[in-house]
Image (cartoon, rainbow over all chains, first blue to last red):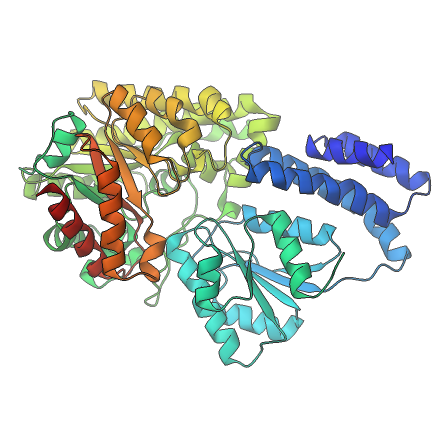
Length: 213
Length: 342
């Protein structure tokens, strides 16, 4: 549908006004909010993710697109709720102890919300103990750990070790992301997954939860 | 005087490749204290620098622990320090941003390095180190680069968005940041040290190179030129991540000793830096130290050295070393250098 392709294109260009205007137009025309989300917003962000990975888009543009997505989601949410669209699962996220970087985490949160997940965001500088307490309180399906520095990535391991020692796995799956980490590191510290960027983080969460679409 | 580093900066081949491991918060480990404590205590910092020199024998020293925070703190951002033996690095939360819009520009004040925040303490340390070790090894006071300082003042996410939505405001903020850095860096030079500038928020992993060129290069150039006028001949500029796309602008800053981080292309750096007779530091990825043996680190170091093709301006370094990194990896890198240069 051309209008959904247009929506994806406006999102890619970070044109928040045009994204929200077209979202409202489509809703008024009776188009399914799930379709708007999947074929408009998520499709657009997938292109953004690909371009960022290839070095064709940089953080300021990605943030603009994410902002446009967030604005559109705000319009879609009540309609999704009315359609009885259920949360696909709860994801608990945070930047590990000693780390004050949150841009990547925030992008992952926006993308996961867009994909239908409920997010509990613990914020920055989260100790292993706080993660554990939050897991016990919120019972998430997935925990997403973020670190931006070689100094702080070590706290991903201490968080995972604490969670495992508390006997909470395998019900809680843990994924990691951030500039200094990679799949090797994820394997080494016993994480269930690693994602290179926000778009791939959604794919990884779906994969871990056995969600095909 | 250990002239190795200075010789590399001058394009003269030293007796061996200079070694510059990135020891910032890890300094505190040498005196058995936390980064939060050492970053706020001149005696502890002097002890840490001296111990780093004696145990690691790098070819230059950096006077700084949390190298990105000092100017922002002096302008008014709150730094989170850690107590009770916590080894986390002091940091500024995005929520501590003090610049929220154009109306805030006029209320920002350039801090006086003799009085503001930790600036006087660090200048005092620089002065002492210049007296005690200044004749033995090059010393550089750590200063922020303009984009990274602006990122703390505005909040990083907000600053990146502003580069798209209100570049004029970003230009003003970067102009303010440049004045702060010029004054602070000048104090280090007057204390008898050099300066090393850190600006990793401007990395081309994050910011488009054309935006660096348009917004960040002019104030950076002004800072470097100012330090040159103050008598500091060579200003290293550290921008982490894959800065290969940024290389031309990086060299246009006038900095000497630019960073070829682990993810950047060493061949491109070698080609362009040798054409402009500029030194560069090639980093070994410190993230590997967690899961590698010293022998594997030595092997990686040798590969990097061989790829340098004997370029006189080549310096070998590491990514930032986490607090408590065992010395075995640094010893392995030194062995690789000694072997390569025999």
